[in-house]
Image (cartoon, rainbow, N blue to C red; front, top):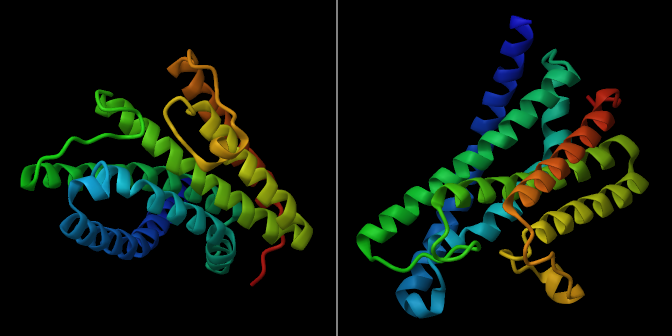
Length: 233
């Protein structure tokens, strides 16, 4: 059991390290762009601060990294003698850790921004929302985008072209349902196009419960697809 735990955490650590290296470029570029826009357009032109600005880049990054998780990391670790189970557990741990780390980075940069030039920070949950709530909702949302990408990558790796079609559909449904649970707070293109929203009195408990259920179903589906997949070495 101890050996399994060590292997799981070693895979998770390695994946976090590699993906944070990729993320450093994304965050640096986003920060430079934000500073430039803030300088030339001012607070009125840039919106509600860095915290809100980095949300979409985070989501896109997590989606792309999730897609690359199976073809890039599974084959690599199997070559090193790591089992599919250890890869899956390590990848799941690393994706959860990345979601929390990204949130911490966003909070730190926002804090520095407030020290240099204080602004009213308005997040997707409103102005007066608890930062603890923002922390967990933000982390959960970007984790779902990773899971959606991971689902796409696993579907294509396991089943080929037709699997890609179904996995993309599943990923879009996952993102849509996640956004629907928070549609009272999140204003997404899907909801604007389809004019669909969740009940206004949908409680936080139901939103969190539904979000964890969606994430669990996605991770379970990925586990089923990667459990006995033929690894391309």
